Amino acid sequence: MSRVWTRFARNRGALAASLILVSMMLACLVGPFLTGHEPGRIYPDLVRIAPGLAAHPEPGDVGPALARLAFRMRVSVSDVTVSGDRVRMVVSDPARPVDERVLAYLPRSDLFGHPRIVERLDEGRRLVVEAPLGRLRFLMGTDMLGRDLLTRSLVAGRVSLLIGGVATAVALLIGIAYGAAAGYLGGVADAVMMRIVDILYALPFVFFVIMLLVFFRSGLGLILVAIGAVEWLDMARLVRAQTLSLRARDFVRAAEALGLSTPAILWRHIVPNTLGPVTVAVTLLVPKVILLESFLSFLGLGVQEPATSWGALIADGARTLESAPWMLAGPAAFLVLTLIALNTIGDGLADALDPRLSET
Image (cartoon, rainbow, N blue to C red; front, side, top):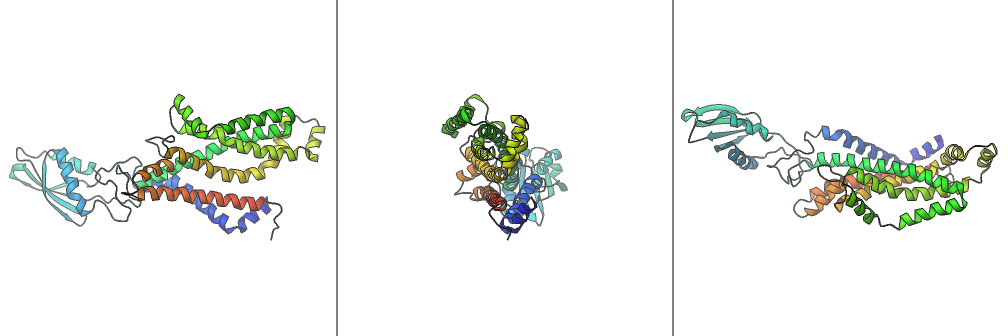
């Protein structure tokens, strides 16, 4: 094992990919708590904001935002003046004194802080109000509803990576058990088991998912079941091929001569000796599963609102490509970077586990 790690450590590309993958996982896990925005928080006054470092609302956005708030407050807002990080306005109601409680609408919008009444005029029918401006930043912009795209991309990464990990684990468990059993038993049992695999291969995957949607509610659990139900087929064939070459080895014959049961031989001798190729296959299966989930979400058959994934965000971005290209570029960059990292790690492990390669 130390030799494998030494070979892997010499592959700078694989090490860099591992660092990128770990950083991506940490960002998706911790990042949403550090962006300053909740994933489902809607800013109706900040719809389709382009990416940047500027704080919002900008001076040109203050007037329209106050006009919308004034309609809800049932007052008039005039003489709006923006000075630095503060805004001054005149809130008036010609019919009666202004109820100061309506000023609570300002901090509820997240665009303004808690207001302060500077002056009362006309027996309270006009109030000179000053409030701090909100300091909202959207590094990757906002979507069609005004939600922070960076936060949603990181939360979507949790879902995509979770699907990739769980569905791969399911495919790994089923595929190893099935393939090892078929390869070791051989004969009629092997032929029947592998014909079942061939039949499942012939089923169109999208049609299979649509059939599941007819009977079950779409969601994360359904996607895990659908992907895990078909991705074990490749793993089963790989493990079967390895088992066929292992069952004639001396250590397996010795275990049989000692009277070990078939499950014991599979568990102690067959499966451990297939872990090298299986490890490489897993690193290549995870990006395949993530890409498959993204494809389903792009078609509208995957993760549904309010949950999201990289595929769902890419589907939303594709619909607004001309007017808001950042909605596609951001989630796609996360997805592509993760897939490249996983494939590079898989290639590095394949080289490290290849016994034909010298240590030099």
